[in-house]
Image (cartoon, rainbow, N blue to C red; front, side, top):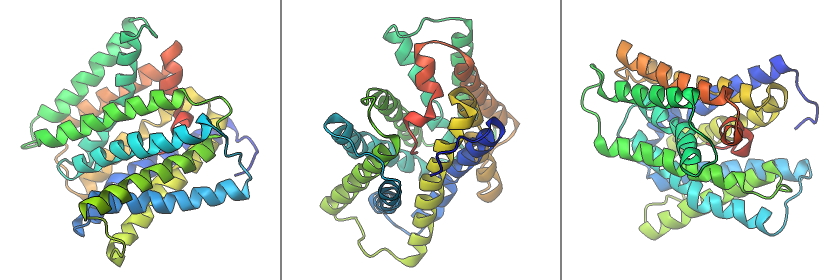
Length: 307
C-alpha cells in the first residue's frame, strides 16, 4: 500500500467504496450456499484465500509481525471470536433476507455503547439515548412491519448473536498492544478464522477440500472483494477521511445490503422497513458524531478491518 495520505474527499470516497464492498458479502453468500456447501467450507475457504493475499501484502511491504501478545492475541481472536461471529452471520443469512441480516449485524455500534454505559466508560446523555431509541425502534420496524412475512426467530437470534460477538471482538481489538501492526494483525485474524473453520469442519466431516468450481467463484469474490479489497480501501481511506467521517460513511453498508437484497433477491422491504433501516443508520451517525471514550471504539473501524 502507498504511504501517501489521501485527501479528505478521496478518503471519504475510498471509505464509501469499502462499505459497498463489505455489503456485497451477503449477495455473494446467498449463491455460495445455494451450491449446498457447509458454513465451515464457505468461511474456511474465504479466510484461507484472504489470509494468503494479506500475507503477501505483509511480506511485500515488510510489515512488522510483532511478538508476544501482539502476535498471539490477533490469531486467537480470529480463531475464537471472528470465526464465531462470521459463522453466526452466515447462519442468519441462510434464514433471513440479506438486508435484515446486515441490519442486525449493524446494531453492533449500539451494543458497544450499551457496554460502555454499563461499565462506566460513558455517561448517558440525550444524544446517546436518542441513538439507542432510533436503533431499537428501527430494528423493531424492520422485523415487525407489514410485508416481511414470517421472520425466522432462530435467524434473528443468530443475527443478534453475531452482533454480540462482534461487540466483544471490537473491545478485544481495542486492547491490542500499541505496537501491533494492523495489517499484520488482519493477516493473523484471517489465518485464525480459517484454521478454526477448517478444523471444526473436518471434525464434523463437512469441510470440502475439493470444492466445486461454482462454489469457488463466489468464495473468491467474497475473499477478494468483500474481505481484502474492502479492507485495503478502508485502511487507506480512513487516513484521509478520519475515523468519525469513515464511521458515518460506513452507513452505506446496510443501505447497500438492503437495496441489493430488494433488487437481486426480491427481499420484502417496503416503506416501513426502509423507515426502520433509516432509524438504525441515523443511530450510528449520532453515535459516530458524539465525543467520549467509547466514541473512539465505535468511530475507529481501523481497529477492525475485516467483516
